[in-house]
Image (tube, rainbow, N blue to C red):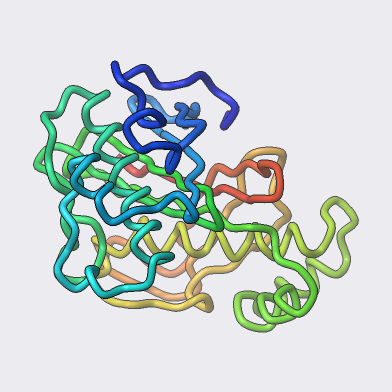
Length: 246
């Protein structure tokens, strides 16, 4: 559950960040040894000096980026470094890897996501694990139509239109998020971009799990028809999806 307790780290991140970060707390991943953190971040309270204050290395190419991009990066890396310390790892940078994904220290795998002032990080204490997490603000108006066109195939659209369990905006955002999580989960193994059509939802989610089936082989270990159960929660006006494959 995302409404778990606060993380105690001596001087809190809220104090260190002068209000840029708030509501830092752990959430239950439902996966043994999985460790998740979630927080709020305030772009209006962002200051470039916070990279130094929070001991987060700012990539050179980020120095000229807009404040929105810098604040997202700072929130994500601060939360991830806090999570690593909670797991007993020393303070360490989490640079970008060759493909743009975070490069985690030896012995740990992880994933970071953010959406409109909320940031989430998922960690697992093994370099061999596949980890994915995604958070999305529930879409509205034309964004819903765009997601249905972009992320859904015809069978998924038929399923969505026939069901009455979810409002269409929530289900659209949830499936979009689940496919984003699956991409993050499998990318380290696949090693290249693959799009939304490579996975499909064949049944409606249950109360906490959404299953995606691969529609084509992505890797010898990922044949067509393989399926993945992604955990999810609808949290305020967000959907959160995550998965760990040890």
